Structures are given as C-alpha cells and as structure tokens.
Image (cartoon, rainbow, N blue to C red; front, side, top):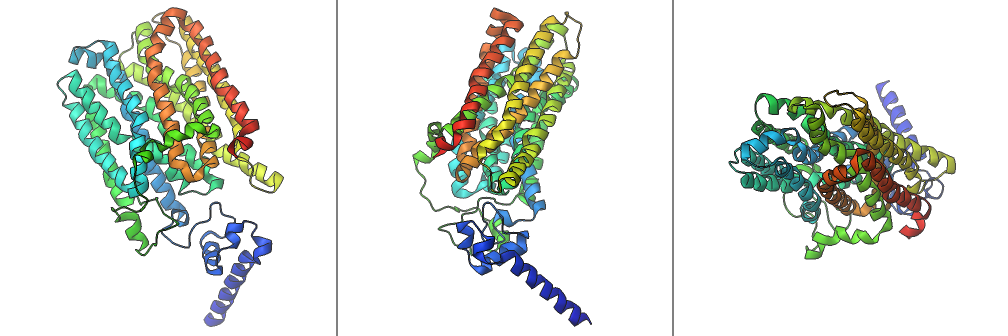
Length: 503
C-alpha cells in the first residue's frame, strides 16, 4: 500500500512539473526563459512553483533569488537596520546640541555642524564603497563598515575637544555609509520584481526613520546620563550588528555570467572573502554612478525626491530642537518626544509607498495582461508630493501661530503628514529608478543617495536665514513653491515621457 501511495504521489508530482513546464511556445513568452534547458526550468518550477519569474535565477541554490523567503527577509532586516544606522548616527546628537556646546565650549551653531558633517559624508562616501562591494561582495564591506564604525563611535565618546570629535564623527560617517546606498542593490538582487516595491520600502523606511528615531530615543539618555553615552550606545549597537551579520548575513552579490560557481552554497554565502568579480577595477568605477546624471529617469526622480526629503524630513527634524526649544523652552527629553510625529507619519506613508504600490502594479498587470511600464508606479507619487506640501505648510504656519510657552499638537500633525508624503515619494521614486535600470541598482542607489544627502546637507545652512528674513509664513510658501517646481513638474514629465527617455 505504501509503495502504491508513493508511486501515485510521484506520478502526481511529475504531472505537476509537466503542466508547469508545458510546451515552451505556449507557456513561456520570455525568450530568455524559452532558451533555458529543461533541467533548468524544472529546477525553477520545483523551487518557486512557477516559471513566471522576473528576473530569471540560475539553477543554483547560492543564487539569492532561490533562497527561502525567510532567509531573504532576515538579510533584508540586517541591511535595512544597517542603513538606518547611517542617518540614525548622524541625527543622534540633535537633542544634545546645547550640552555639547557647553561641554566643548563652542557655539550652538558649531555644535550642529557635527550633524551636518555626517550628512555630507553619507552622501559622498558610497561612491567609494560601491565598486569595492561589486568586486569583493556586500558581506565583507558590511563587516568592515561595522568594525570601523564601532571604533569611531568609541572615539567620539572619548573626544576631549570639538576638533577631535569632528574627526571621529567623520570617520564614523564614512564607514557606516555603505548600506544606506547599496541597500537598493541588495533588494534588487534578492527579491523578484513583483515584490520589489514592498521590500524596497522596508529599506527606504529605515533610512528615513533613522533621522527622527535617534533624537526621540537619545533625548532620554542626554538628560539622564549625559550625551557621551549616546556614542557608547551607538558603539554597542554596532557590535551587536557585527555578531548578527557574521552569523546571519549571507553574500547577495552573485555573478551570473563569466564566473563558474564550484564552491558549496554555504561557502559562497558566508566564507568567501576574496574577490568574486574578476572585472578590473579602475578610477572610473568610483565615479561611474555620477554618469547617471545623463539619464533622465534616474536624475529627475532623484531631484524630485531630494526636494521632498529636504522639506518633509530634514527641515522638521533639524529645526525642531531650535524652533521648539526657543518657543517652548523644552529640555532634551521634551524635544526628543516631538519626533514621534515624524516616526508615525513615515510608517503610515510606507503602507502606500511600498505595499500598495506593488498591489497597484499587480492590478495594472491583470488589466493589460503583461508587466506594466515602470512609469505606472509614479501615479502614487503625486499623493506623496501633495501630502508633503500640505504638511509642511501646516507645520510652519501653526508653529508661528502658537503662543510662546503654550505648546499645542497642530504643528506636529503637519510634520506627520509631511513625513507620510516624504515616505511615499521615497519608496516610489527609488523603486521606479531601480526598475528602469535593475542591472545598475547599486549605481542608481548611490546617485540618489548622493543627491539627497548633499541637498540635505546644504539645507540647514539656509534654513535659519530663511526663517529670519521671510518668517515661517513666507518659508511655508517658499517650500511649497520649490516642491511644486522641482518635484511635481519633473514627475509629470517622466510620467508621460519616461518610456521614450529610457530608449
């Protein structure tokens, strides 16, 4: 009876494989898939239960597309948290500027430069890390990143002077930066296109909320145990990350052409610390992402996103300590609590930017019977841009109207709306650009990060003069106008001309 049952089960399995594979000319429209061997197609059918895969993985367990979903998600969590630590580290001392200024005997403005310095380095440093991660893999770069960031944070905690702390902050920013840029490549080389928006959203959300979460948490530390413990906590966190990466973070860089994979999948994923891409390394590789300035479907989304990020994320988080501190006389802990609004808004916005955008693309695919053009995803970005405009207007106007020493929640409602809009735009724009040039996902991510961080670095220098010269009312109007001109209009252009601009 058992043999009969096993034989029947095996027969049903073979029939399922046959039905899934089917005749190549009827079941498989993709020419790449049609050219695969029967063994390769059978492997994919058994592994994924379908041949409708984009992109097409190798018939190899080491290919990240063939990993179990649980392993993909665990690795994404590690990379996304690592990406968050970049912006988290930069913003960690925002609620302690007054303490730092008093301790190191500098002005409040100079103390704030310790954050601006890291913002700038987070934009430029990925140009260095991208080619190295392409040649040697993501895993070794991430491990080096955490070891050196840990050392840098310990240096910050023990810095006796402003200059020493500035140098240590610069070192930390340089080494913590890789995941904030090449994280988009990890998502693209791990998850299929149909689920990319959702998982790209996890990464972009973590990058975004690193800014408000840091002062929200460290406001308590700065008030109770002193601001230097902020750096010790950061170092401890880097150490925990290092252990988790070592045990659970496999290599996602998988070369499909020109390289023979003879090692076991475990060895390739965890024990490879040598060069994995034989392509020669030249100086051009370090500036290659900047060549994407020539590609409208990358640079226009980057500009649109950078302007929204500036007003939807940077302005509220950078200016809350100064504007709220002056108007309501808050201490570090009270200032930190104000950032909860930005955190809530970002999480809510991601539900539309990530999960809903994948559903949106799937709905369109069912309508037309094929994969939609990447531009269809951009429809959701208009909601994000308008939310950011409306939110920042509410934030600035209501803050201006609030009587001194009489706090009310309405400015924070505006900040939450702006943060939600920013997160929608973040996920939609980054996913769109990566969908347009998937093979260059790392370069696309580096360029977008570069544009965002440099613009975010410049902003805090002209925010105070703007508030002083035209007031918060005028600043609200200027912010709305800049987002209309540099975010909304470019999005409309690529919405209708994107396909022709890509070809």
